[in-house]
Image 1 (spheres, one colour):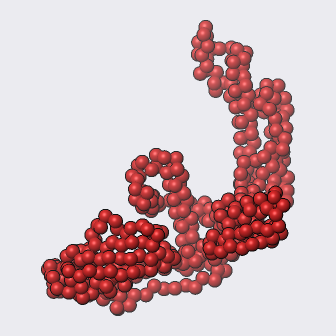
Image 2: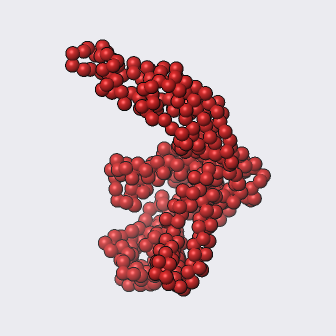
Image 3: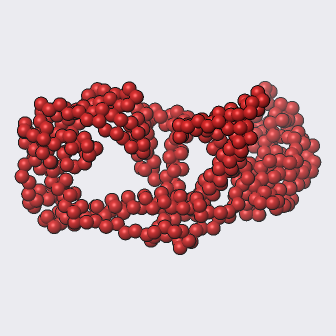
Length: 452
């Protein structure tokens, strides 16, 4: 077998492969012998069927398998010899038919493909990300210690007015703007007043109230609120207090401190224990924040050649996902076919309408396409960069993190994990979560390189 590699512009490569008659015959014979002992035909023992008869029955299949093996061996040898990492399956400029194997003659093959780029790791000082050290204040330590005290102390039921630190069993229901009900089953919940269990105005409305009070108020949720059905919505709330409990006097005695953690002996031990955990939580929060910032900075920092097919496919996906683009494209094509001079462009994101000339609409479509291309390039470069970190550092998915995310998704879909994972889309979701976890680990590795 002879191999010849030609470097084309960019990441494109052309591989020429020549198989000698001996290569073809030897590979065909290996395939034949592999299957000969398995074939059974009437009148012959297994493994004793004549080659001519086998070829009459199974010749095409054996030839196809030989072709597949020849091509696989050629690319395996080429990737080692030329140190290639193919970006996707090759396109054969010159191919051969499986029937050519039957002739046992010289075979020529020409394939074009793109390779993955060699990406250099980003130096620690080349990214403008400010280092920060997590800090814990004495006030935060006191707040956390107080919250622990409220958790472990005993409570006595009361019937007077609500005070700070009271533990309440309440029903919070209401009407969400648009017609949907908030807590339609009127399920009760337990809240600790003064501990930020509720939105600030909801909590303030409870102070001074009692079991007979009727509490009503309107709350406006911000557009970026985490619960989708409440984002940017007005909710008319109704609150009813079912039970009021007040904490009793509680001191951090040796016995009470040990309730928090058995190794603790004194209140000073408790404060240090609280401080250490607050610092660890802040460190994790800060790290998550910096990793998110790093994700954005890397997209603008990375600049290297990528396979053309990658960004073409990704840019097309951007176009398909963008409602504005698809709507404007449809209206523009309709206007051209009907020989109209204007196009009505509805910007759903800003809830606006705009009348454009056909030329203006075509220009805007071109601008959208260029924007999609730019975003696609950034996304692909980042993916390739993180994948190289994953490969170089031999990163493995953290199963407990992935499964926790999967369980959270199952709860939101009201499905059992074992049922979702059986579905094809469930497997795709799980694999996507694995990929996200590996990329998160790669970003963490890069961040720790910057801020050890």
